[in-house]
Image 1: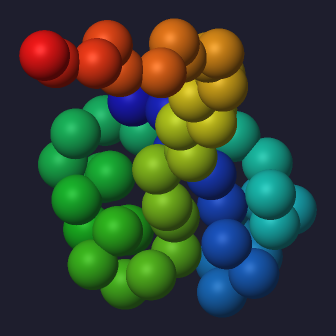
Image 2: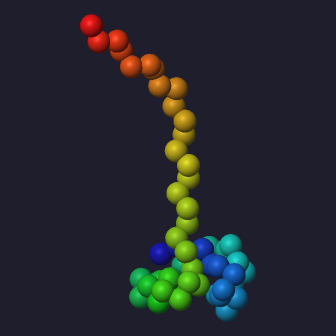
Length: 55
């Protein structure tokens, strides 16, 4: 499970680095605030057509 190290956990690595943990390790470290899940990439903006006029 890929997680990002926070500044609260120097024992896991430098803040902002990605690490692999087992599910049980991940649950423990998440509860302590030592790791966070990676942010999802922002959705791409789509050029939407204006809604069709209803008659």
